[in-house]
Amino acid sequence: MVYPIYLHNLRNQPVVVVGGGQVGERKIAGLLPTGAAIRVISPAVTDQVQRWATEGRVMWVARPFQPGDLQGAFLTFAATDQRTVNAQVAQEARALGILCNVADAPAEGDFHLPALHRTPDLTIAVGTGGASPTRAKQVRDQLAAALQPIVGHDL
Image (cartoon, rainbow, N blue to C red; front, side):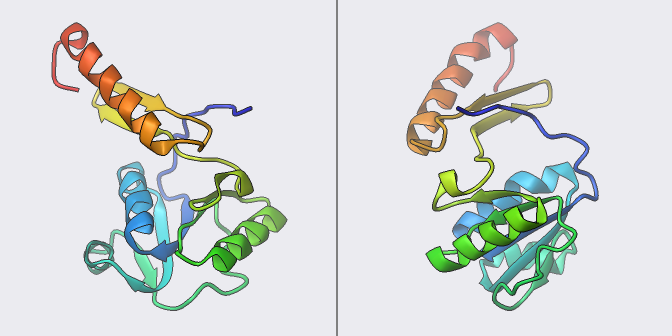
């Protein structure tokens, strides 16, 4: 059973994203509007993550994950394409009492992310407990479309 929450006041909170590929990029994109202090640990990153690092929006540590990399983090995301690394991140996070999202094994982490649709005055969040992200996105999109006439502007 899940317990849904909305996190707020993430401004300047240290968040570590391990993995700079497409999955890591999606996690970072969702975090950027919060103002969190995002540190990306990955030997290589997407062009977009590289731009964010160049702009100073994230700090990129250009190397593989190492024990100790999560020290001081408020939240962490294990988003590599390597199962063993993601498991290592989750294990270290648990030992340090840091909430962790594990992209390739949601049950291994402490939380998963719902499919989100945001407007300035409304947030729609749909989750399936990590079982079917595609279905969550479909339901989110259907809800946004159904609510558009009620809210009076594009969702």
